[in-house]
Image 1: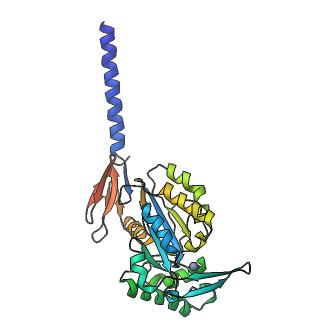
Image 2: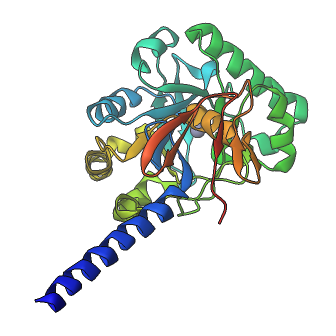
Length: 304
Ligand SMILES: [Zn+2]
């Protein structure tokens, strides 16, 4: 009898020690998260601003997905014929300039240059003119700050990125899919995860991703490509599967970058993390709880 009592007592002690140890271990873990407490984010970045955006936006809205729409303000309201590499031509109908605020009500409006010229064939002053004009036009038409851009044809380089760094843009997307969910090294030459035609192949990987590291799934494309029925079915299925989820932050490029810049401004010292005055409010998890770090506040962390 005594032995049984002793064994039970020992078991309780072991159990208690285990719980205490796991609690202490948890207590030392602090990691920063996105504003909704998640570590995963989805950005859908679409170019050109043709009338086909209307149908795509309906799909995004149904699935609580946020888009960034990169527009050529100098082409709004026009119809253009674009020759293709395969000797075919494509006819694009661009949205009317007065319709932007109602169509992109829940989405980010971004630049794509005024008239979609290839920057690699332009002089510096011509590039700046294309970018500045687009930003000014879109700002005047929407009264919104224009902070994001997709380079026309996705073409850019270090020199062009430096050139546009004083235009007020915080980010600009290029071609060159990474097929990863890693955060970019530089936001002015931002390589996306993949074109939407490849997105379904990465869908399950992203949905099952489950760790404390911040990530982003950046998909890009053109809504005019969805005239093809098969392509439309693919994007519909993708949005239905990845949308409406609690564990993903649906966000536009500018808001995403703004938060990342806020995180970059944190000051880390031995034993503490300081959010400097004037920075934005940031979210973190400590002991599994979602907490806010306001500007001017600090977290004391246990050092291992
Ligand atoms: Zn384009």
